[in-house]
Length: 585
Image (cartoon, rainbow, N blue to C red):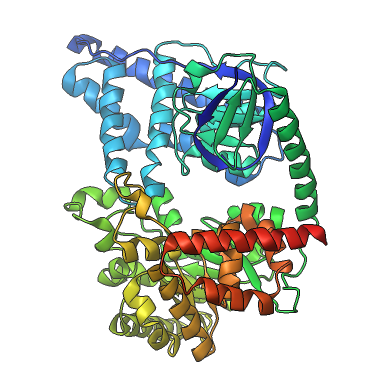
């Protein structure tokens, strides 16, 4: 009998294969006292396990294909760095000494403290980075317990669909190396490592499929649909035939999309649309170029700060931004200044004061930077300097009023003057733009547009601030809807403000990367998209098969509806009709 299991689809695609239930249970950690005379020996046991864990990760890294992109290998590098982090290992040693306890318990105490730091963060992406701590701790605990490695070797897993409670980055990469067909995990969310890696390596994956290991046995035939977040155990002949046909169509579509690489993005009635990518670090450009040779519409520089756990100096930032610019080979680079704050803070500053009651509305982004100009100015100097080497734009996050904008622009001018005095080369005509992320900025978009070179709509925050909710809060997440009429009105106002002031307006939030909204945004007048790398070709395909003169009146009519549900229904109908027209050509 077929069993249907629902989860969260985090990497689209169809996979059909035999299940392999991947069990990696870990023994419960208990505390026991260590005589003071044995503390040194216990510390040595912990340090030996650290070394062993590092050796295992290096062995895994060496087994992975030589052409694996650097941004994927970075997940393992992060874990290797954590093994050397004093906050991590010295804290455990301090616990052994302080509590005269065994290494396992001391490690657990330290990991709990570090996990709490991440749990207290508001930003959903950074909150899930506690997974790094948990994964590294699990590996060290296994080494302390002298547990064997989990993943079988050879051809045993080829073509299988892995069922697990959760997967570490090392597990995921080793499994992919063995050519598995897909993943299903009981835990994890859309920002988990499994989700990010599965997208990067192009393997269908579903997370949050509760009780999957109880409902599925090794050897059973499975179908996973990454688009719908659906697992079918022991499918009947009719389902198998249906999904095999879908899988065949999917392969054909990938070939079709691949042919769009490095081609123009132009509507059927001749309107050129700018389609750029989003990155977190220069290494991400390699992945971007895998899909398309295009520019970067959003470079989130705060990841450089967070990964280094400090405010990097001017020279470090200059070299990093220069590396990104040169890798783009003449394409433009839009650098967003650091969006740090109470919820996305550098580790060393976390304990310097109380956590804000509402971090999302606290001292973050440009507010944080302007409060500490001695830390912000090195970033401005680095961006101004690298802009002299190629097409670079500077983007300011979280602006809320004109006075704030003037303060930032004045600081930029003062920074330019200082560079002149020092006779350091910089771009005196650097283009400066603002993120439209709060309703106040959207309502004042024309006032911003008259004095800036471009605007960029950050829909992730704009939706949350407009609807007064946290989309990862399960109690209210059902209210999170990009098609809420109020949200769409603010987006429309921002686009119209740019057109009136004759400056470009881009959209770089998740809406831009979602094919469901591409025709809607085109019909609203958006001409600049900045999307996740793996969404580039799908979005381009839709744009290249859209006729603006036909879309605009239809979208205008859809936007007259006062209900998000009505808008969604009409938009789905429009997307279906347009897709059928494209398929028939």
